[in-house]
Image 1 (spheres, rainbow, N blue to C red):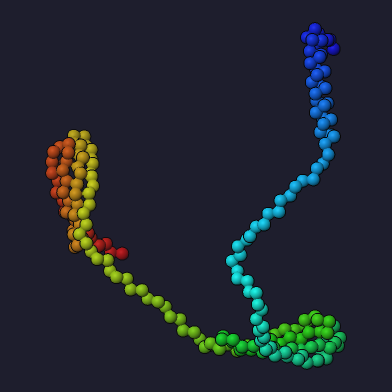
Image 2: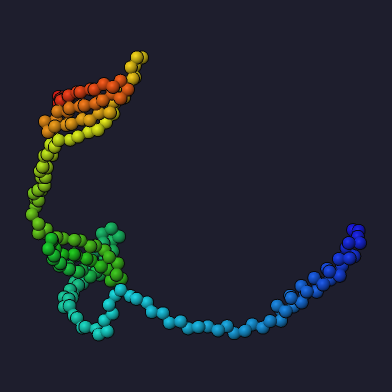
Length: 194
């Protein structure tokens, strides 16, 4: 590596820059960690439920069904064990019935059956809705349009006015701008067989 005259002239500048950097780095190391100040901010949150301060005692009488203790013989594993059998009746607007449960002493569910009788009729008659549509009123309608055409000797550019009557007859009147001629037409709607 060669040292040039320019490098020698810039050497004091390099030393000053290095000294400043070392001073700045040493200042950051000597700083002590100060306690930060914290502000306590109280916020209020709107809740869309109503809080009740007083509890209202409310009791619902529930009939506790005492289970039957039954000895059950398992024919598959050829074991005998004690079970508890519960038969819980229930009823609502659609069905009435009972839920039968057989449970081992350790809490394992052995059998559970749902027996019910529906309260609605056996066959429900279906009623369809019928909508009668009002027939569309036929009105006189007016149309504005333009016709155009080209042949070897003739050019047609015709704005036209059409009138559709209640009996679905169309009258047409137009004026050919290029050839300075009038055009009159009539047409009737026809029905095609399906």
